[in-house]
Length: 280
Image (cartoon, rainbow, N blue to C red):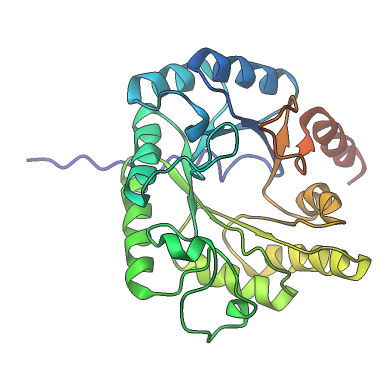
């Protein structure tokens, strides 16, 4: 019996950089579709769909959203409901929503670094033997069994024809060397895109280090990387780093109570990127 081989559709990782991801947190199918259309008209080149905000994440509901979108969709589940409260899903339930999104036609999923090991979401649990494990980073897993499970999930998503963005939000400040070592460590799991968000870009010196890190990541990591920092000066790294080689920018089209206020306004980001293309 012939075995069907499905090749990964390199849709998200092949988007011209920086890709402008319109963040969508609609509660209903129709609400999500409306947000997607607004994002499309305001300059988005892809959609970042927050699954736990939706009232229903069955395959048929997700298919309606995917079918209505002219932009490729990255599905994510950070276990946070529309109001920001804990959605209460187990790791297995959270992963299943991501797989349903792929079945529905999503171009890729956001697989968080702590996947399959919930304790690592809140702090480092492994052996402190890497530069990036200093300072108790969140979402960093070094346990080989957990890494193997993550690799199996990545392979499963690839077999379904979609891509995986492997994201890590350490929640601490990291030097250039630490971030690069972490990215190379994550790259071994064979994701299609890597996303790292550090914290505490609170001084100009730290902000400059974040810029230097993005340049180093572009040179030393084969996989497309999205990297920025939170903190007092972090908002500037959200737009400068993509110009320096980061793969994507996460943007809000219409701010409301559910929005991540540190993210960029979509229309402003689109205008900045377009104008920079004229200069560079």
